[in-house]
Length: 462
Image (cartoon, rainbow, N blue to C red; front, side):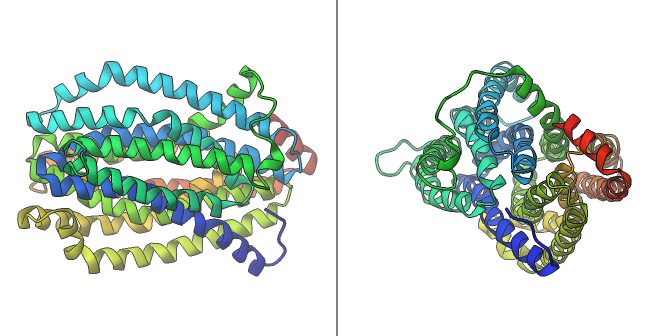
């Protein structure tokens, strides 16, 4: 990262940071995409089982990742203020937090997963696949969360191309192990959808080891000596990370968990409906990587400028990022509409399931514009270290407005499962409106703060 003066320089730097993040996010999501597509080829029960398992796993994954994302604005602020001494210390403490959170999630899952699946109206084969798919994923939790911490360090330095290269290197590994474990090739057992969980865990371990090697051996990462002079856990720093990270994690959790809740509520419908819903969500979520990447890039750039007390530059980055995100959101709408038929047959050879996927994809078009506004604004606000109010806004939008409205439509109208999707569309639109108002308020407030008050508040925020 470096200070910029003109809009052209800002656009260039934002693009340099954002595009590798986009490739990285698509690569990371491609692992889930590969899991889903290959499982669908193994059978409708395998696809539905992976869908249910993913519905329980994705909110946990994104929520914990959100907590650990707190390190990105913290490190960006420190680098923007040229305070480099604390960088390796905060990364080490972040790794401790990642391991601690893994233990908490693993313990909770051991007690809760089986009862939750038992409460759902699932076919026995679907329940079996979902349970063992999650067991396979559990083996990769520690490397995934530790990698998330180290990735935050890499990205805060503006070296987003490195995480892109790591992710691209991992994709062939993921595809290979999915193929041999799902279909029983090269002497491996034929595990069906269950094999996708173990393949993903193996890939997470590969990513972590490669990431550690690169940050230990190559500049500018080796300059910070992350793995030298390892320090003991510091409760005060854990508290700082968690106070900032928990609202971020819960905000993301409430947004992603509503999709998972809908999948679980759809268990009262047929296996074909569950499979079609999951396939449509899977493809729409692939396109969601675009606004999500803008959010990550804007957290880095806005956080860097706020750390350097350059408010006008932070506002400029926010405007550029939002305009680009909305433009690409419109392009995503066109892509979904034009490709809905061939996309449906990527997931299944069953024409009935394909028809349901196409119907769900039409509804997903309306997600795109709301996400194009909602998600980048969350990233901008994280750059300001504003996380508590967005958390409350997300909870109200998704759980108090969107989900009850969707349930009412699905229960009391002829829309059936599509009623839940209308509820999701409503929640995203409401949340985008709330966040737009909040961002405007934050920017006005930042203008009004005197330099002395601004410095005092920044110190209080860490």
